Image (cartoon, rainbow, N blue to C red; front, side, top):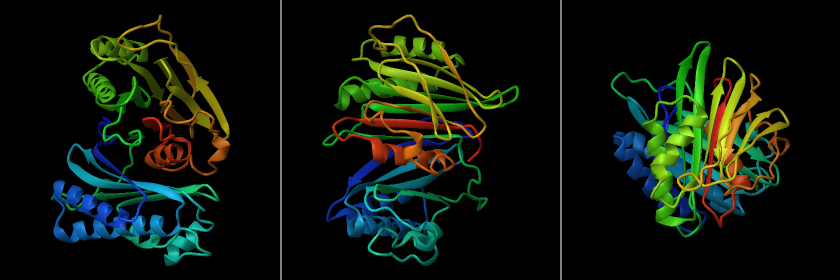
Length: 350
């Protein structure tokens, strides 16, 4: 599904998930080249993307117990990029600095090629949990006429993954950033279309489009508008959070089984949702509020991720880029028997 963002966010589309297997490197290299050519990269830049993706795939094949790569196109209003996300359940990387410095592997753990990936990418980030797994983010911008690539990271990012065996995902997310009186205000939506497959994806896509075309600021009003737009579909669970970064507060309105929380350090403050189905059975809506600390993070995710994770399980993660936070939590808490979706908002610029 396509996340939506403005000047401080990124749209993403054409997400391709590739599971760990014997042909992972060849398939990933072919898909990466296709996406790089699609966004207009010259031949030498396509080759760099292919090299980085091949390194990531080879790393998984050699060392990971289980894993996958996600490749997608991300766009800003004036340019586009190919984004690589690598997730694994494996031994982890005991010394990231050493792995990045020399690109070598220590004691059979992941690490080969990290340095070369970092050198090729315009944006690179990695987080590793010993004996649990590693998440890697690399973004490759197609340079425009001014020769520059975007310097600023978005406040918000997200990721979706379809249930095993499906090519479309019934989860979607969207976000926008507005300038409030004291600074940026980020509004994010997470949708989980009922069931799986094309009909769930239709509901999720309609929710995303309705959010994109909606000008309401109140989470409650946005959920009401989505309810009207989802009539005639199988319906969905929906949550909308509005993070006022200058005031240090997040407002939330949710219907159905979407988990929402504000994270600060090892503390996780749950934002409640009401039972119901958007598009079918709308309850009397209520907006909940929670404080949002200066270095806090707001997270919305579908029930395709287990809700049992704790911030303490991810030491060092919440200071990373939003896309990497989303990827690592999905990689560790996601379940393959369901569509999975997560969106992350940071209270400070990444």
